[in-house]
Image 1 (cartoon, one colour):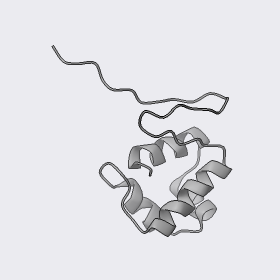
Image 2 (cartoon, one colour):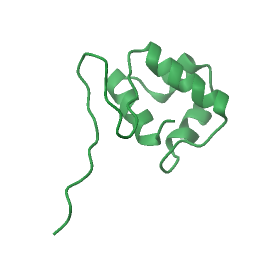
Image 3 (cartoon, one colour):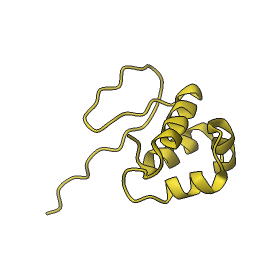
Image 4 (cartoon, helix red, strand yellow):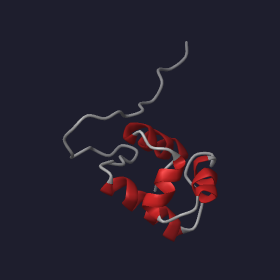
Amino acid sequence: MITAAQMRAARALLGIEQKVLAELSGLSVPTIQRMEASAGNVRGVVDSLTKVVAALELAGIELIGEGAVSTATGRGVRLKAPPPKH
């Protein structure tokens, strides 16, 4: 659904701290901290994940899944696969 790196990147794009994301999503700061400390996909209660995704989307973030096409306009960044090592 969302990776910890996506959460951190989304906050950076919005210029907000974990406290603000917690307020926007109706969750606690420790919950946001635990989510962002996850390895890979965020682990947590589905309801909490849904709240974070909804809050980020309302704030103007488009979360792009692996291999998905972005349909929105505007600026952004996307992590691509690193080049193969020789």
